[in-house]
Image 1 (cartoon, rainbow, N blue to C red):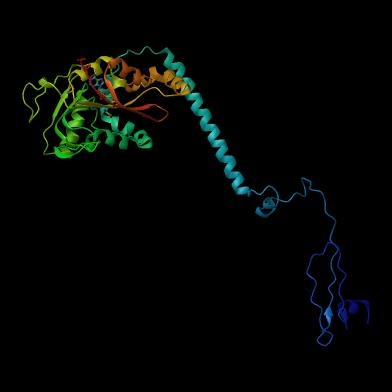
Image 2: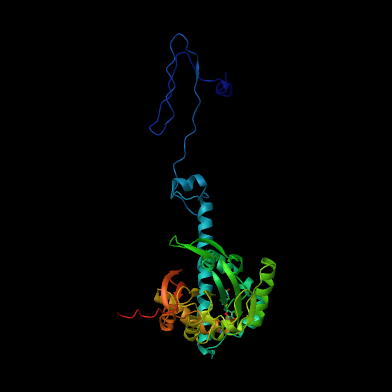
Length: 350
Ligand SMILES: C[S@@+](CC[C@H](N)C(=O)[O-])C[C@H]1O[C@@H](n2cnc3c(N)ncnc32)[C@H](O)[C@@H]1O
């Protein structure tokens, strides 16, 4: 037998031979065979493991999901995603900040008049599309509905715009109970819609005709600060009647040149005892940092959209002298809801 033949002969032991277990070998020990059933054991020669090299740029292995889990625990795909997201967000924030500072410096150079209400004549056609998304995001539909559902009797909506409150009206009177559980007549006997912009009134009129074709309503392009119940010929209402039971306005105080005077006038045409003025408005926040942003951008916003969004609605209401029945705020304090009534005469002391 020469050397080459020797190599091909397997190394066989008659009695089981356990290979030497090095300290690093963690393979489970094979069960001890009983001497009766023992079979020859083939011993395979192990190749010597080369010593571990420290990682160098040349021999570095690419990190796999497995190795990443062993290290910091975050898979490389997730790390890449996080990195790209962080980069995108920081770029977007940078873009917002750059636009903000550009708008602020532009806004400071503008000479915008206090009365910007004429802007709605040109924006009427796109108004709904412009505000739809932000109103949805802020949940304003529900806030409109909750307010409009309180309208009853002879109702006047001022600054009606494109009629965004129309779907929430309860037209026609019915017997029911009020918020305090007392028997009351609910629903609207008549409805009158007023806006300074004829383009806005035309859109409200068209929408109303589609929603309530059988219900008569009045539409008029005029200043809310000059509206008179006796000027408005309402079906079913006695001639010469001087009061409305409910006056509704949503997002209107921001657009008027003299909101305090307008509110005072509306108070004078509201039924003195049980009449209510319902407002849903937007304006200053509880927070100084929000107000700073509103103030900085106000001239540019008013010039473009016809609305002074930094007005103190609470201050306007207090100055009007109307009595506050209910006050609520949302969205960092920028959305305001009021239920008001005409100032009640002091009871005479007897
Ligand atoms: C921001 S929009 C609000 C429209 C609508 N009320 C709403 O909630 O979507 C303001 C509206 O107020 C109207 N407006 C401004 N000044 C007014 C005034 N003095 N009398 C009546 N309407 C006025 C504008 O023409 C515009 O339609």
